[in-house]
Image 1: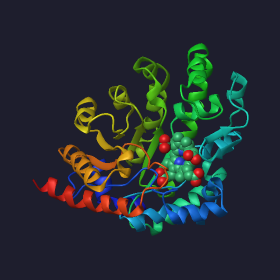
Image 2: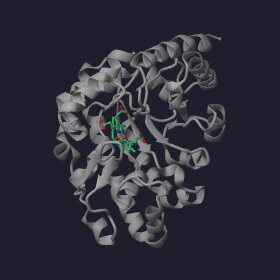
Image 3: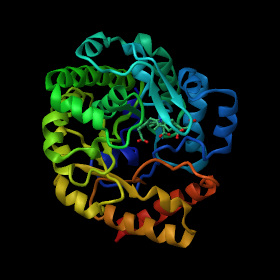
Length: 353
Ligand code: CP3
């Protein structure tokens, strides 16, 4: 059983707020366009073709583990993938993001969304996870998009700066909103449970756009659904990571969801985040991803500060405050390998103090 195999791995120990030998590290978007091998594959296959082919998914998921020496792999997929079998037609357009063919605009559109068995409809994901869980030298993180972030794509029809249509819908049609969020939450629970059954040793829920909400709206329109998700996953006994961007003012409420690890962005110091979260919630983050483009001495100094703050208490996983950014020229993979070494070496030093 894979969970048993990884029980004492430093990534999972840190997630459980247990003492570790050194600071575990992985990077959001550690598989992606900064890698020459990924860019070469993308000349031949679309993003979704890679997601839907277990062999390609395996290769792309595994690459950063072998190249960077990170302590966890994250399944290569996209938050949009599980919307397909619900009946949502979409594309992922390069440099734009997800674009929905027929956005959700009416209560009837919500009613038309189908719940399904992910073991069948997304069998290719589970096949990739089973093979990865068997072969990888580190635990595999499964993931899903959070209902708010998915609802925003569904309602807006694509990426959005102010999420105006989404908020207008939420405020003017609260019942339809609740039904949409319930359905997305139910799908997310099924999908993540299937991922853990296939071998994922932890799961992360990405709520990239939730930071656009005022705390009162978060509490009323999002929190109950997040609580339903994490509450329905607790019995699995795997770390439940919750990540959002621009969430400094929401952390106190996000701590009420039942997530056991909180992803923290770079706009709030880890010590402040810890104080707000209190007690037993582990923290993951939070180096500004733009620092990967800074001169190495500055990047190294900032990484050491993050490590000092994070490692001041048990329950710290080093990561970026958001995914690796795509830019020209791209981040050099050697920089990430060097950063990984720094985290392990300096983490050991700080923890021994
Ligand atoms: O972290 C990893 O290595 C796992 C892979 C992963 C992808 N998407 C692959 C991907 C994960 C965890 C995601 C989640 C995801 N997808 C989120 C939440 C996390 C976040 O970054 O906020 C969101 C909002 C999406 C939707 C999405 N998909 C966007 C906004 C984009 C970027 C569009 C662009 O071209 O800039 C995508 C495409 C996407 N998903 C890429 C990757 C590696 C870009 C590379 C490509 O097109 O091949």
